[in-house]
Each structure stands twice: as C-alpha cells, then as structure tokens.
Length: 80
Image (cartoon, rainbow, N blue to C red; front, side, top):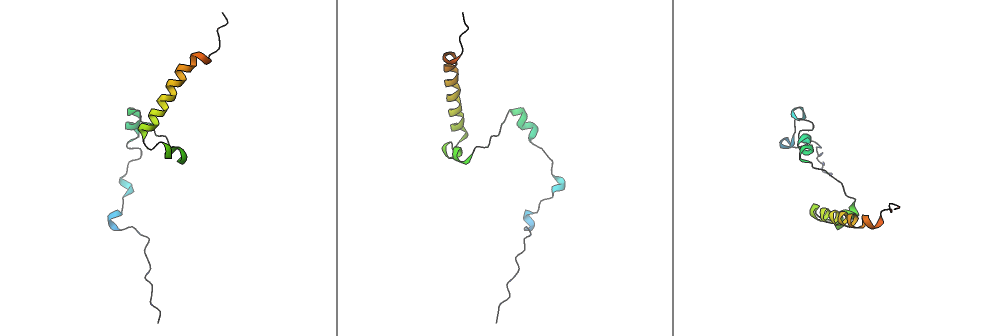
C-alpha cells in the first residue's frame, strides 16, 4: 500500500509575515546621502582579493598617491 505524501506549503510561517502597508520607501536614503555613504559592488574576483572595505580603501589611496606623485612626470611641458 502506498503512503500518502503530505503537501508542503509554500507559505511563510506566521512569525515571518510582514505587513508591507506599514513600510516606508527610502527610509534611510536621506541619512546615507547626508553621511556621504557610497555603496560599490565589487566583481567576485576583486572581492576575493579585498575582503574588507579597509583593504579596498588602502589600495585606492595607494593608487591615488601614486597618481599624484607621477602626474608631474607625465604632464605635458608648457613649451617655455
């Protein structure tokens, strides 16, 4: 005799039910703009190398320092 398989419900449990009518769109957007927060999504291969935001910032600051120090060497002459 075959046993009857119970049908699994796709519904969320009651404790996970969320009332979207009470939600506020963009609730934290103003604060992010005021604080100057920028969100950048890294490609997966880059994210493997830079595991923290501190590591990304350090690398970018090094690149900026290098750019500033070599800008004088690579700029065109004034022709004087």
